[in-house]
Figure 1 (cartoon, helix red, strand yellow):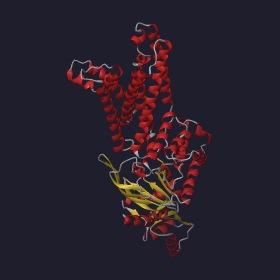
Figure 2 (tube, each protein chain N blue to C red; figure 1 turned 180 degrees about the horizontal axis):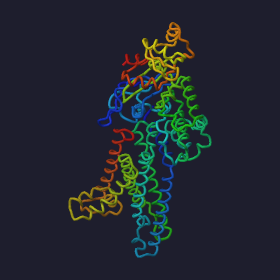
Figure 3 (cartoon, rainbow over the protein chains, first blue to last red; figure 1 turned 90 degrees about the horizontal axis):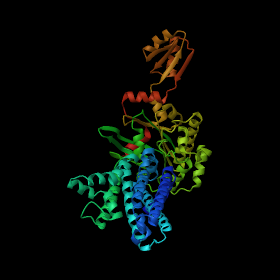
Figure 4 (cartoon, chains in turn red, brown; figure 1 turned 90 degrees about the vertical axis):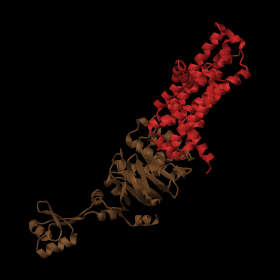
Length: 255
Length: 307
């Protein structure tokens, strides 16, 4: 039997696995409500606030910051989706049903990262639409939209893959969430604000720092560029998946 | 057919499984026995690709489990009934399993009915008793209608009716020509259903033989009652070991029923009772492990020669 057939079956099983637990629905509903609220507030600001109209830019500019909240929420979803099997012991039947561990890793990554990217694009569009509805002078230009949605797909896709990798690496929902929060929020904030050049340099290469640079075009390093930030994020995604994959492939299922 | 050859597993400095070699043949129920910590579960986990052997191989139909493209169609296994997501329903658990191996969804209803889960299959697993989880695990193992079945401690948590049901299930599966490999530390339970046993202790093979061969290996006792038990004990004492087991009752080790009866007749001692005490697998197990010898029956001898 061809690997692609086994992968297709694994993807179908992973899709069902993702959408048949309450935590997924709770997270998605909460994130949808939160993003809708942010979009409504941004629209209110754009319609009559101090920064009304964002200098004549499109409604998409008003929801750039929403990308970061989507990143945090969907990385959390990815960590839970990857690691919860270890918490419940479900990894034992999972690996009995799909003993080709590389296929399981690929299937789970395709489903969870794919769903994360789709949700990010969808929710960001909803938020931008809420801005455009209130600030009638702002349009939803296709050009600006495709640029921002492309950035969202990259940031959330890389973050999701990193979360999945951390889930398989730590084999703990709490452990993967704490690691992700540290890499995306705590360490970039702490190291980037310490008066030590070497620690600031470390902070430049953390995924959180580079995600912020991709979203806002601002960072702590003078040498940072959009291209370098995107590459660094991609490297973290690949590195996270490689680390999680190695643990999955090389060690016993539950030890 | 399951083939295990030189299977070894180390956890740090601890050797959990030590060079196991045995076969599990189709059409039989093979019990996998040993005390807690003997290495039974670790052996099964290596067989199912969950743990990596330090050395040796475990194959099903000549292939390693991880090489099977649709493993549930070839091996059905229940290792840990508690290892399921508690938030899903039993039916959803089965449907995910079916999807992962390209098994038609109609099989889900069939196995739910076969294991007697019925309407409970629609409830969340966290509300299941251990016995219901065992039944769900067995349903999952049967889902792909596989020729090989592997169960680790399957009677845990089952009520009396469940235990009787599972005995019948194992027997039926073996009679259909399937390979049934069942681990347990409950030797009396295995004695009732198994054709063969593989016994391990401290990770090493102690016995691999038919159940009747193992029982024959144990120390046979003959129970005899006589109103002149003291006189009989004196006569038999020169021929075999004799233990006074009650008022006017002796247990003889080293002679069979006929030999005890003949000896009593020649001495003119009347007998009121004479019977061989039925040997239990548990007693045979202790006898084997105390001897600290590796005991192999005919089939395993062939396997050993093959390797």
